[in-house]
Image 1 (spheres, helix red, strand yellow):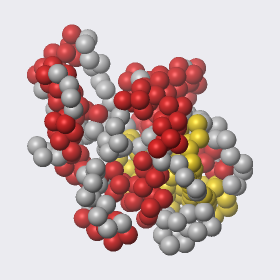
Image 2 (tube, rainbow, N blue to C red):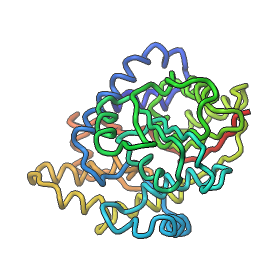
Image 3 (cartoon, helix red, strand yellow):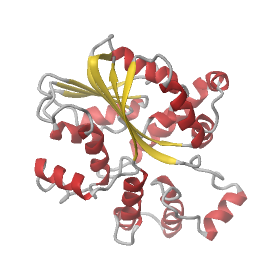
Image 4 (cartoon, rainbow, N blue to C red):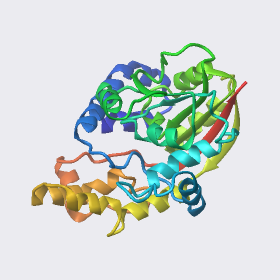
Length: 307
């Protein structure tokens, strides 16, 4: 998976990406299938986001949301993504909300408590993630389907709001995805997109935004400071990362490995954390991949309107 994600985000050669599209998708889907089997409820869903005002707004709508099984940072990212859509949170009663790249479904499940939408569907490439999400979270008005972000199984003009959180960096063709977004959105519908960006991937997005995608981009915000704040919160000695590690029933060696390597998975390098000596040695020996993630330049939030 690591090789695929790095290749996708470090080149703008779309012909090369197309040639490896099947391999990339298989690698990524297999990795997320494994995560779906192994992850436990309450584990983080993304790198997170922290802003005191956002946390207060969530608490006003869902009192006590921080009291159980969460540090709140993943929820804040989802809430921040939705609150920037130019639609009042109380006006979703007749809306169809689609999340592309829903993973285990926790993010969309959280949004279903924020807004009372007519229908909410989460889509993910990982079959195991979808099976788990439907088994544990689906109910009337909320369900999950397996599918490809670059070939969405929905009719033209069917979706009111399309949500995409920390997922598109896994897509071999960003252009195909954006054209699918424009196709399935209703005229006047909205797309809220949050993701990590390398310099190369961001430059390619800016090029695409100048083409005729059928989308009007109404928000471009660098949310790197808020994401770094969440990462620092998680990786603090009393943060959720170390708390989860203490609760895991694993041997001393596995615990040591997780403590040294785990921060990379939650965005540690983006927040300024560096490899420990043992991690550098394991990478040098080839036990660990030399680069888990591409060098992330920024974490950004975009909102677009279907023209």
